[in-house]
Image 1 (tube, helix red, strand yellow):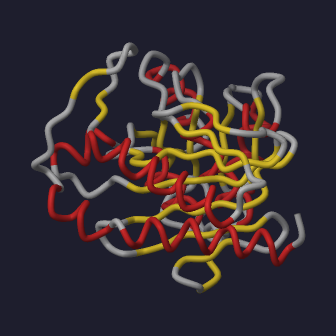
Image 2 (cartoon, rainbow, N blue to C red):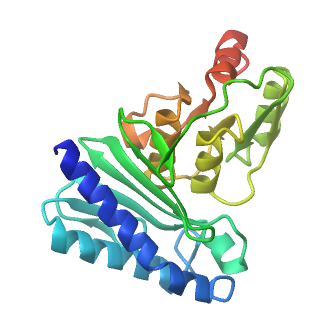
Length: 254
């Protein structure tokens, strides 16, 4: 894809997400839900957002494939949009302000563009590989001034949380379980409000991580890989400010 095609596709995804905002706000905190096979919640709005975006992309950019958390794979997977229609469905159901719409444009297994739309606050985070990260069109970067003793990381891992927290505490880093969901956490990292995000021993999928990881990396975050997965399938990792990752690498604690 050319850069212009990437930007055109990214803008279309953003428009679709924004167009659904009034309806999502109307049912925010009041929606019924059911359980998927993995026991995670799903609402009719997860499916509606996903289908609306898939229909729009098929009409305007039919050469692109599509993979959604709720409806699976449609079309070619060489270049496709990977979509989490409502990241943080549990927050959406409860009326907690942490849900986002997320999508990553994937080419040959690598995320090349991302959109994270905070429909509660009408903030859109975007990134294109090699072009930086943006919030509402303004460039954002990870924090480069905080140092040891004043670092904060969010951990998606619950089963190994105590071990991670104890290890990072030795590096002057406070580790907490995030309020909300992945997209919200990665956005906080990208705009410098937290210093790291930890995905170790989780059930998170590519649609949970790919958009936010690209956003954070384009904002200056560094990946500390803990397994041999690659591209959007990266699964075991810590992503954080250069200073935090340098501390972890030197310590050998994780």
